[in-house]
Length: 351
Image (cartoon, rainbow, N blue to C red; front, top):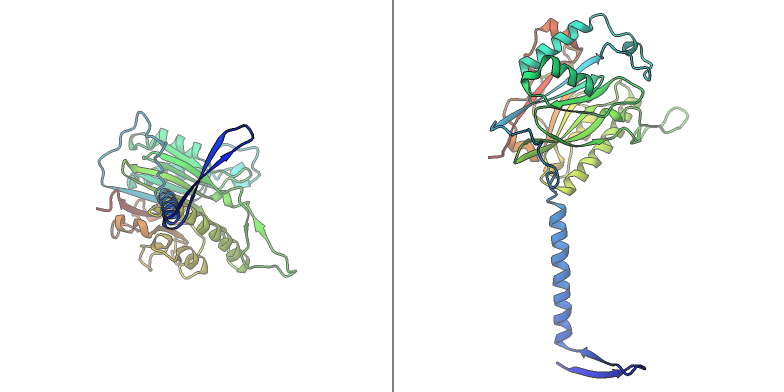
C-alpha cells in the first residue's frame, strides 16, 4: 500500500494537505462506503415495511379497550334508507319524499342491529353517518357505538356508512377519483370514465385492540348487468387493487378487509379480479360457502354481497363465522331491504 502526502499552498499562504490512497486502502474505503450505503438502504426498506398506523394516533382519553378476544363485522345493503328530512341539494324523489313505511324500516333495522350486536356495522344505500349516529344515540346507546364515518356524495343520497365500537383512524375517500370503463368503448368508439360513484368506495383504519388493527374497505360498486356496467366495476376494482398494494407497501403485514355490495356474482370477472393476487397478502379470501346467496331477500338466487379478507387476516378468521345472520324474521328482512346481511368474525390475535 502506498500513501502520498502532498502539501499545497494557496495564494493566501494556507497549507492544504491532500492524501492520495492507492491499493488496498482505497478498496477498504470503498467497501466501508458501500456497506454503509447498503445498511442505510436496508434500514429504509425495513422502515417502509413496518409502517405503524398507531405512530401518532392515540385512543380517546375516555376510551378503554376491552379484553374481548374476537370481534364481529356486519355488512348490509339497506335499500334506499333515508331520514325524514329533505336535503335541498339532492334531487331524488326517494330522498325528497321518503316512503310511508320508513318508520317500520327504522324499527326493524334497530331491532336487527340490536339482535346481532356486531362490533362494526357497514351499511350501504344509507343516507349519512349523522343519521346513523342519531339512531345509535336514540335506540342503541347501551351497545357502545361511539365512532362513525362516511364519505358522502354531494348530489346523491345512497352512501356507505360505518359505525363502530372501536376507535377509527384515517378515512381514505375515493370520491374525487376518476376510474375507467375498463377495456370498453361504446358503439361510436368512445371511451368512458366516471367519478360519480366512487364516493361509495372508501378505506378506513380500525383499531379493535391495543395490539391489532386492520383497514376496512366499504364498497357499493356500480350496479347493473351488461358489458358497460361490468367494465365500470372493473375500473373501480383496478383502482382498489392499486390502493391495496400501496397499503401493503407501507406495511407488508397489513390486514385488509372488504365489506359491501359489489353488484357482481360469484363467477364474475369482477370478483375473480378482486380476489386475485401474486402474493398471499394481495389475495382476498371468500370464506362464505358457495351456496350462500344474498339477493333478493325474498328469493335469494345470487350473491351480490361479500366480506373478503386478505391472506394476512386468514389466521385470525373465526372458522365458519362468515354467514347470513338470523337477526330478523323473513318478513322483517324483506321490509328493510332487497339484500340479505352478512357477518364475519375475527380474533384480535393470530395466536
